[in-house]
Length: 558
Image: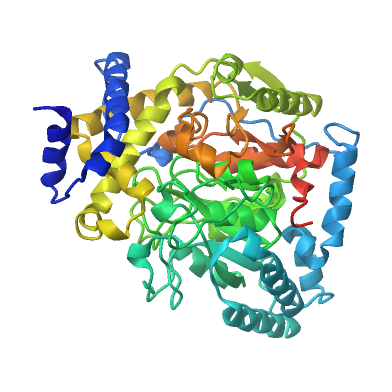
């Protein structure tokens, strides 16, 4: 049987009809996958057992090295990483009025009644009306709901019922999280009119914290489809260049935060979808430990890899959001029943004594890595060293195969969830999404189990590394934001640094660490041990106290 007939036969078993165009698109990817699988089988030790989920709770107690406490307060003084551009950025942010304030600066003004949540919400709605025609971050705007939330928050605060730092703060949510009475589409025409009857756990927790909901934000179709301008529900554009991707799949969240069209947001992350838009859009994004935040009510992509986490303009803001959304959910079988620390206690601390592992040879050896990214990464490591951290050159052998394991697990689990949609609603699915789903359709059960065995090898290696160091540091992405046209043709290994932390379930943070020669943001990624978000936040916050990259505002929306 030839290749085309073989693929037709595999799809037919699931009642999926393939056109000649489908086969033309699918064959190169299938051949590439088969070659990757042969490499994976050769690389796997015979004794490797499949690991069906990251199981972070069982691993958290096994780490031998404890991170030093960092009792010394971080000074944030000196000119480490600070530039004249950073000074201009602060003034630009100030010029944006209430929309230029981070949550950590806005919350005290709301609490002290110097600013009303209604005033803040109106400022954001006016800014969205003025700028989102270019950025296109919002799929569904909810101004009536936002103003009602803001008035309720104002009344509660006036009556002495202040709930905390998110009370009265405007958010936009990725349109993958169910919101009662507000359509949740996954940015797919196949669910264009879907309106959930109840909230996902994360929006419910944010509502309890007093969030003001501005609307639902765009994403890659079902968090996996490719971005193409002719998408029927539209695409978000990068405020640093509207012909460029803001990073996916949480495209709208990254774009809206960069353009100052919301104060905080929530993203999901299966292979990098919080951290990639954080890097491309010049904002902060945290993928927490697997199980730290409930996924109940979130349209799944890959059950064993999906994470939900905060996206914000600073590490301090991300910590405030994580505090509100973290915690055990007995209705989510993957939710971890572990204590939630006070994340604010991680802020303002020194990194002196922290050992940060940097896989320098692996990073430099990536063919996709752009010189500006490498230079910014080395400069960021120098900043952390100047703040007192010890930078340790480490080797990560499993990283070369981790992306392939992640992609195979993702495609198989996603194809399982979307099987009926592929068979019955193919005409409503974007070509990028359909093409990626077919790779999961074509994979065998043995292929999937081999990837699960590979996950076990990667988990063992990274847990071993984190017994010797406190954090791992890499660039978030090997390149800066591509144009939409480049995304159609560029086959470089773009997710080479991010997917390994979904595979292992480890917490990973992306923060801005510079700009390339074209003025596009570059991201630094810091990853830590299972449930040790405090150390990850501590290092990221110390870096942001010493630099100003995260305060830069895109000229398009300044």
